[in-house]
Amino acid sequence: MKQLILIKYGEIILKGLNRPFFEEALVKNIKAALPKDFKGTVHRAQATIYVEPEDPTTIDAIIHRLTKVFGITSLTRAFVLPKDIPAIQKGAAEVLAPVLRNIKSFKVEAKRADKKFPFTSPEICREVGGYLHDAFPNLTVDVNSPEEIVMVEVRERYAYVYCGRVKGAGGMPVGSNSKATLLLSGGIDSPVAGYMTAKRGVKLNAVHFFSYPYTGERAKDKVMSLAKILAEYAPRLDVHVVPFTEAQLAIKKNCPAEQLTIIMRRLMMRIAENIAVKTGAKALITGESIGQVASQTVEALAVTDAVTTIPVFRPVIGMDKEEIVTIARKIGTFETSILPYEDCCTIFTPKHPNTKPKLDRIQASETRLDIERLVSVAVDGTEIITV
Ligand code: ATP
Ligand code: MG
Image (cartoon, rainbow, N blue to C red; front, top):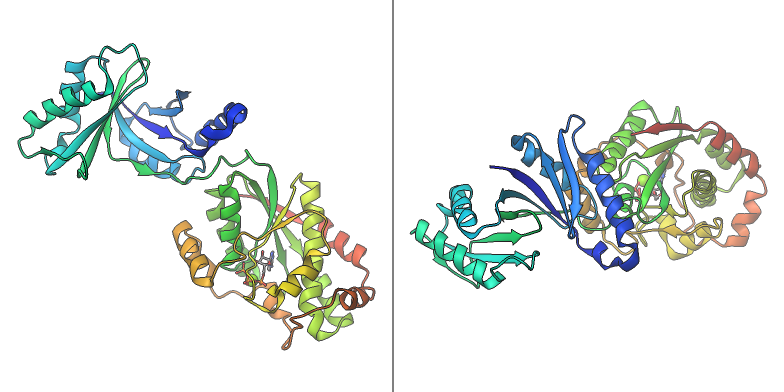
């Protein structure tokens, strides 16, 4: 019997006139997430996307992949039947037998997208429910809390029968809400910040500051591994690896120790903004959370932000570490984030950083640096790796 994947999407339905734009973005992302050797069809009709592989044994693996595509609310394996009550009854009993044999209670829900179909939804439920009840003596009907719900959807060309659905990633299709540049460190927070922004449909690219030889190849590999995991949610992720050693050494040599971190962060922001503007990104994203470290006090964040003209998004700003870790585990970045390789910030971190920096004092210290040159050296030396 013919089988396929029915994909439902939630929030983008609300978007009125923009709806076709969001739907097309979602279809495109679904196609991109399919295995390279996928053979079959993908099409959209009546607020549902149908993915039909030629080989039905690949359905579970494909569903698993698609659980990482933002914009999808649920996915299900459905069986395709003729639009005819006896065929639906017999077909449902046959294909759902492995499930229905092993439970005690069920109910049938029906959707009639084709209003010309001669049975109403309650009638379809009654006909199919009654038939299944007779066919499986172990079953009782429980309309309030059934163990399984058997769904029957009667659509334009066929009827679809299924039970059980897999939850999708939610959010909006990546690429449907502009583009932003993620400052990606090797830590726990920034991959989560990237994930949360991509979830809202924002396409990402990333900037990583690399301080060779103070940070080694393994630290860079770690960041690339994180980027790869993030790219499962935010596909075609360009990582701009920026040489940052010269800038850090210049800051260390010329600026007061307690200001090193904040001046370094302002320089990171300038470089990141430069790359964002060049690549068409409209905002920066960081993994900062209020009070987590000295550079993340409200005062320090204000001084950091004073240097950029595009907005800085901090999706984890109000989250506790524990909450961030929960998401990191869910998306699969946590185990990589806690690998012990040093990052460029920890090496240049002063013992007593200034937690309440004053903008004018920081700006005064910065006059001792040739900021423009440090930015252009870093930007020019950038290596772009696409994952
Ligand atoms: P994370 O766990 O994301 O590294 P953190 O708590 O260690 O965050 P910081 O090291 O102060 O905090 O960094 C704050 C933010 O600055 C990071 O979330 C990230 O967005 C950015 N950042 C820090 N170091 C780098 C780096 N080497 N390259 C790119 N971005 C960085
Ligand atoms: Mg860090």
